[in-house]
Amino acid sequence: MDEKLLLEQIDAFVAENRENVLRDLKTLVDINSVEGQPQPGAPFGPGPKKALEAALDIAAGMGLDAHNCEGYIGYADLPGASPTQIATITHLDVVPEGNGWTGSPFDMVRRDGYVVGRGVADDKGPAVLTLYAAKFFKQQGATLPYTLRILLGANEETGMKDVDYYLEHYPQPAFCFTPDAEFPVCYGEKGGYGGWLVSAPLHGSLIDFQGGVAHNVVPDRAYALVRADASALKDTENVKVTAEADGVARISAFGKGGHAAMPAGTVNAIALVVDYLLDNRLCSEEEARALEMLRRLHASTDGSSVGIAAQDDVFDPLTCVGGVIKLENGALRQSIDIRFPTSTNAETLCAALSKLAQDAGGSFLPDSARVPFYIDPNTPVIQTLIRTYNDVTGKNAQPFTMGGGTYARHFKCAVSFGMEETGEPAPEWVGPMHGPDEGVSEALLFKALKIYILAIARLMQLEFCPFCGGPPQKHDKKGRASRA
Image (cartoon, rainbow, N blue to C red):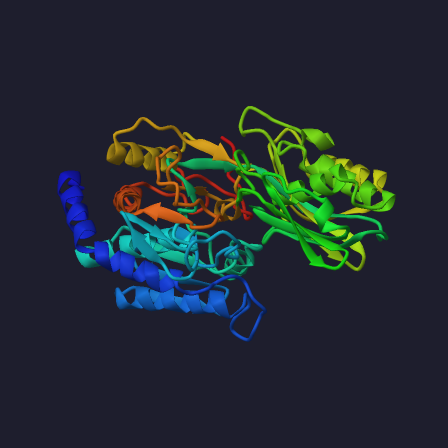
């Protein structure tokens, strides 16, 4: 492979397709693909279905072999000399828009070298880039050594049932990367644990309590309705008090949202309401007991306030976030999102959260658990990706682990590979993944496209074991490598 010539071809392709990429990205971002009620042919609702169909139409227009897998997931193939697959996987569903947007979340805009809209970073931008990477190789005309498969999911944000369906019906790729995290290369993801703290039925002054849009998003808005004289209560820096009705006060909190896996720098609006209610003695003793349970939960984002803090030598410390709260059938229900390292486990977390709830007269209801996932960073595939990133950027970056959960953990050999860049300066009006005014620079989009094309070209030169992505070796019937 003549890499000098290849790089010239990539640069020319990226330059020629800048407006096409942004056009197709807007097509996808302008579709509200938040999960909805299941319908025939739309297991995750009409929004994800519409986005999936639009993306597959884009793929078909590029001459790729596009397939819709009953609305669960889709793929676009560029057949190679071998049926062994190198794959990418992105997703077209998005988290709810939330609050604080200065424009429409589902009308992508370009401003001063940035694009803004729900999904431009997570994960419609990367989805478009993977399709254009395949288009590059299609235009070259030569047959690739392996089949290139571009997977397009529709349920990453709320369960990953799309990839579960796919792996029940289709074979594993030899290697897969997902551009749904940060550069350079993530070779491990923390475990995940979630559930609900539920109070005992409450009686007193609390009429309603609502906050948050998703369990994996730090909420930036929350409010409570409480029987109280609003005129006797004072606003604070983050809390505003208004009269909802005669004798009823609305306590509205304004925090700073973000991804639950990266809570540093966020301000949880639910915690602000809890503190205000308790500090101003606005609730009955029974209600205060439940609110004290929530205050303990929200007092830290590392779990230390509820006795579950943990760390190890592979991952960053545990994170713990309460994302959604609601008053339902007279009881408070608070969601919990935990990302944990190898030094703890679901049983330990369940025991601590159950005790927290029981001490307040309530209960803890677990609803999800996944173990930590990581592969050896010295494998040829990871070294190929990190070398490609460093060659394009001129950096000397190293692979890392993270708290976010991606599709990678579902495959035998997979990693996350961009496209976010940490520490890159951006205007104040550009928001993060899962936050208001989600944005990404056009420069990053096109740098990532170059990285992905070059990485795929280099991966195509490796010798793949169909199970683990490494050198050929023997495996048992379950795909486990035999030991030498």
